[in-house]
Image (spheres, chains in turn blue, brown):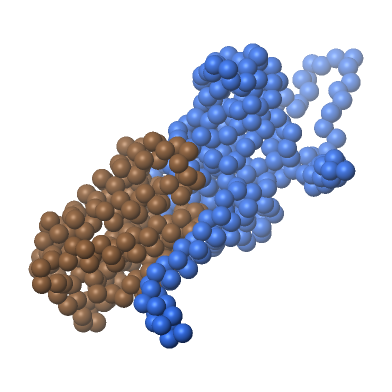
Length: 280
Length: 172
């Protein structure tokens, strides 16, 4: 017995090493799927506070670009607003029926305080949290298109899983043909993403727009993801290899919108009932 | 080791950590060179420090860095491996006559050749563990390996430069 204790004492360094590595492995595995919440993350207010200090500096340098982006977006929104007005010289021989019966999507703005693009699992930290009604699972977009999905929320900050995450898949369609596919990042080039599971018989051309399908309750329909850059027909493959140039420059994000889908709970609970029934 | 030396090591460590978090976090050279200055904290720890306390320091440091990088466990695991290998490696490369009491690994006290032999494998081990765990295995093997090698060259150069600038004078 004494010998055993002596032996354990001699290899104590190795035992501590193994123990701490096991802690690391548990942390890594817990975070392996993009759906599992990051428990220790940069939405922690102290951490996000430090990050936003360094972000303030870089934001100040990029102020001109940010202004430009916001101004062009303003112009776009004003133009859309115009379309809501009825022209003054309209003859009343038609009745305008508004198809929007309820407000399904509410947009909330947020500033990016931390962003990464170079790893294979990238996250974005934003400065809105549960205090502002942000919840896990909401979609995040900006004026150029889709950005990601909220992963973890603290009181004042949230962490968003970027589209540049090797495990995040987004249901999407080719806008011209309505052919369904799935968007997933390969982990290499931050300006390009793969469109998977499009059958080899599909009609896809360079320049086709890829938009969100609206099938899952994260993103509304028709949010731009990118345009097709390259289509590869592999020998004997059943799916096309499609490279999509992202519409967003993920290296350069400053302001984003979080989408609060008012009907998300209803849709998800309805669908979960159906999935449960399928098991019988 | 005097109290003053301890304060100096802790102060330098804080500086490396803050530079890493505030400035180098998103800096990337040649598309695959990640600047990971914070490992200097572990690499420049005194050689006589107990391996168990060193491992706890490594784990704690990696854990905090992970929170900033949103990568729980990955940096911590790489740092732990670095310290564990360091413990063995420093005994392998012990110079004739052994280490002085209170020696820290630096160009000034140990010489340039010893320092390179000490530094390079440890940086490489850290990067190999870090990038391959981060990539979730070897699915993008060559891409990940190129990240490792480019970052390894850049960070080794960076650490040697820091040594030459701030640690080279004897007794400093």
